[in-house]
Image 1 (tube, rainbow, N blue to C red):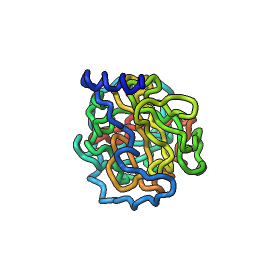
Image 2 (cartoon, rainbow, N blue to C red; image 1 turned 90 degrees about the horizontal axis):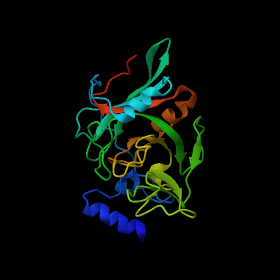
Image 3 (cartoon, rainbow, N blue to C red; image 1 turned 180 degrees about the vertical axis):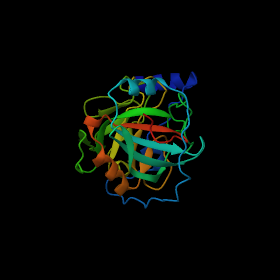
Image 4 (cartoon, helix red, strand yellow; image 1 turned 60 degrees about the horizontal axis):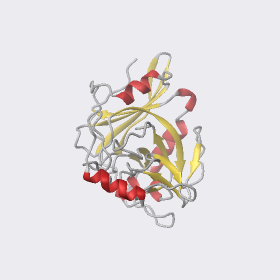
Length: 255
């Protein structure tokens, strides 16, 4: 009750409290419901390099170990709901393309400008971020990252009024706040947690994942068809400090 009262106060103050996780908007079904086929229209033209400004998240990502793997997600415009995903690895001081460009789905309201993502706005955040861990409603598919399998009691807290905002929560033992995001759903058969808003600042967005496409745009996540997603998840190596760059007309990593 306290979480719902606090959520109401935030709404009155002008802070959106609507669900931001992809399963809410995409209508991901329970484990027993078949997944619809994902649509894969041709990707847009090759991504172009552009300077979009440096956010706090980007500065934090660049301050860490030098990445040896980079996933670049490039949208053609801020309002686009499709993007091109390309993966690179660093070899002999240069970036070498490993996968893509592949068509990915992003937010139903497109890509947010740097620093512009807000809870419930239907936009994918711009910036460069790390990966926290890999998860899924299905068993570990053989990934190098720490894997967390979802169960019916596992949810993601996307309530800005909650002290557990933007965290995975086992609701048998902790209160996840209002309208938490279920993790044991078909859209989350497999996915990776993108380290966005790790400071858990209220209202800046939560539950940003790279996960399975179920045929629709998302509310902020990035999705791929199952086979391509698994190729990326199995390729990622924690020792390589992989990053994901999200932006409009983002290009191959520099340096």
